[in-house]
Length: 111
Image (cartoon, rainbow, N blue to C red; front, side, top):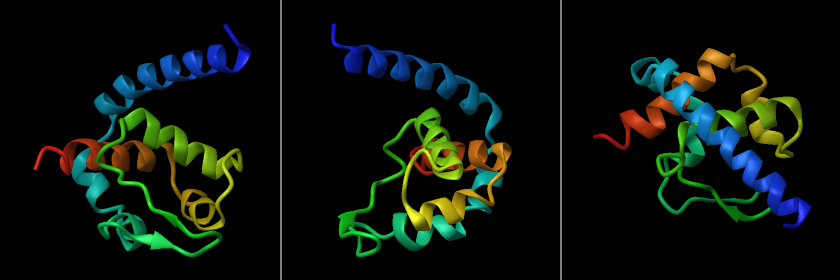
């Protein structure tokens, strides 16, 4: 198995484990109150942004809670590069991230 595939498999396993933990810890109602900055891009169907490059903005409701938390943590740490997302994630606590993830994956998907 190639090293990149092994790392990807390990990462997916870690995300799945974190996903179950986040689901239990995140509060969808609290998360809804924390999504004002998210909705400007992620709340518009088929939205494309032009900063820093043109691309389609991903739908958050189709992601797992663990994936959303991990992505936000990576934006906050700088491991993922996107100026707007880094600025937003920089102000989120771990609890905020769990709540937002719970809202997008449970609060929105369940409605």
